[in-house]
Structure formats: C-alpha cells, structure tokens
Image (cartoon, rainbow, N blue to C red; front, side, top):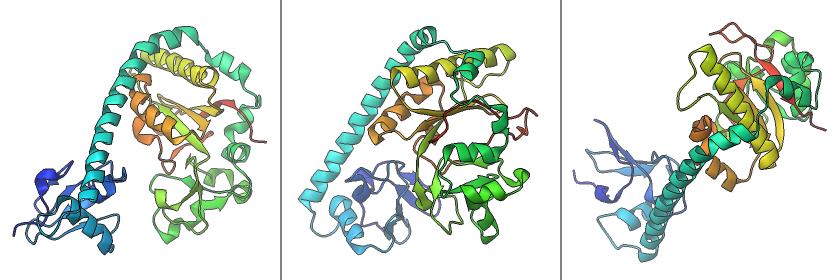
Length: 317
C-alpha cells in the first residue's frame, strides 16, 4: 500500500523489513528529534506515527500537513519545517568549523596549560583525597544530603528489584560501603524512580567529561597513556582557568580515562562542546545525558585491576 507520507521529503530515513523510521518533521519543526528516530511508517499498511507523541492526533496532523501526500497542505507548517532544516544544516556547518578550530588550538592549549598529576593533587581544595576512596564520602562531598541519587552497576535499572539503587545521599551514608556503586550518575532523580532514563531525571547539577582518546584513538601503550593523561589534564585546566568553567572533581577511572565533573553549563555551551569534544579526546555522546553512569572512587576497574581514585575535588558548601 502506498503511504500517505512523501518519504522523499524525510530526513534520516532507515528501512528494515518491518518498518521505516525517520526524523519526525513535526518534531523537527521545533528543533526536536535530532537523532531521527521518532517517525515510524508501516510499509505494508502505510500507517505512520510519532514515537514521542503516539496518541497525539494533532501531532499526526502536523506531520501530514508538512510531508503528507493527501489533503490540504499547511503552508505555515511547511515553512517552519523548512526553516528547521536550514537551521540544522547551519548548526552542522558551525559544528564542523568549531571542531576544526579546536583541533588547531589543541597543541597550544596543552603547551600553555600544563598540569601534572602531582600539581593537580596539590591544587585540590580538598586535600583528603585518600579519604574520598569511600564512595559515600564522594557523594556527600558533591550532592545535597536530601538529593536522590542512583548508584549501582550498569544493568541495575528498569525493574522493581532495583528500587534500592535510588536513595537519598543521606541514606547512602548509612549503607555498607561495598553496596554503594560501582557507578553513579551526575543527576538527581525523582522519588520512586525505577529506571535510569532521562525522563526520570529531576536535576542535572553536573556534566561529566569523559577523556577517553588521544589523537583520535584509545591509548594502548604506557607512553600513549602518559601523553593522553597529560593532555587531558591540560585541557581541564584550560576549561577551568581559561573559560572559567566551575570544576567540581577529577577522577582517574582506573583504566585509560579521566572523568572531569563540571557544574552544569548553559545549553548553548553544551551544544558547542558536543562539536568540539572529539578534538579534545572527549566522548561527545555522553554530553547532555546526565542519566549515563560514570565510575565512583574506591572501586577496582574490572579490566585493569586498578582503583578509581579522586585527583581533585571542590567540596560543595
């Protein structure tokens, strides 16, 4: 059956045996569905819908008004959609330009902002860094006592049996140390949460930058790791001193990366950071996703046998 949607006008079209997915034009008109996964079309029946608004008839009408093959078109809806596509294209171009500028600037940043691990430890406002190997103390140092935080393994989410993984920071202080972790998120959560999904995040007080690459690849030799850590610390120092970002903590994960906890940044800054992140060896996919877990200090990395430890921390007042 022929679909009532003009597929040639869709963005990010993907086809499987059972369905067609694409960026929802109604969501795109307001800058949404950047991943291009909301719109779905049944190739046999021609039926379509938006995963973000599954029961919203008005939303479906907007889709039809923009890319439908039947009925009257809505000129204003089409105009907004076209404007949205132009905006996305401009953002991609700006992102590429920012990334190229970041790559050109990296060497000078590393040269101008050296920060050895010994200097990082010396400069840390909190000097009891070994004391922070108890993950409960790390939580208490960064989060409000009443804040609900999640700690656990990556798969400990999504079921009633995982309810105990969400507790107030104060309650985590009373839990046995070995039950706290091995991971945490930089988010606080709504009471009664059972699933570590973005929809359940209450607040996002921090953004964690995962420095996991050096010169475009994961370090594999001791020398590459040394250079990677030195470059990462220099970038972190530049972000803190040169851009005045408020640093909360630096952790060595026990493997091949550093996690830099910064207090949350404006949305526009996060957008720019996603574009420039790869040039600085930062995992761009984690930026803007406070529901994503990161390692807690005191735990041993399963691949290396080394401990995750705090290198720098500014305690919350």
